[in-house]
Image (cartoon, rainbow, N blue to C red; front, top):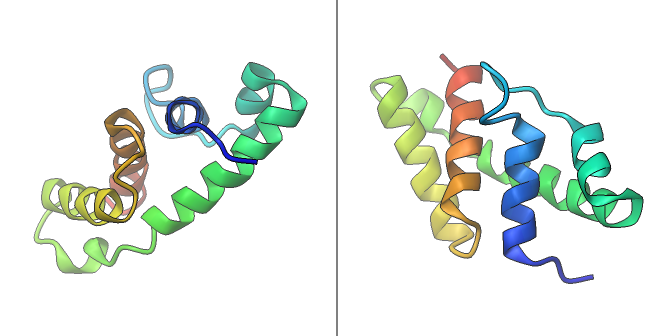
Length: 101
């Protein structure tokens, strides 16, 4: 199944908790509840793959500070996935910088 990038962007934001939580909270159930069982599970699988790809960045050991770390990881991810929305990239960067602060 081909998943629309707008849906993926929305699913990533929902999954991370960005905009509703003060810190990242990967919430599988929120994705399934929002999109339904079939689509939600398909989106969730893709969201996790994209998150793993984001976390493949070595910015956490290369960048001089948290801001630069987030920007570097986001730029690397965006270069590999230019069709994923900026809101999703920011949500993943938020998680990444939180985890490696």
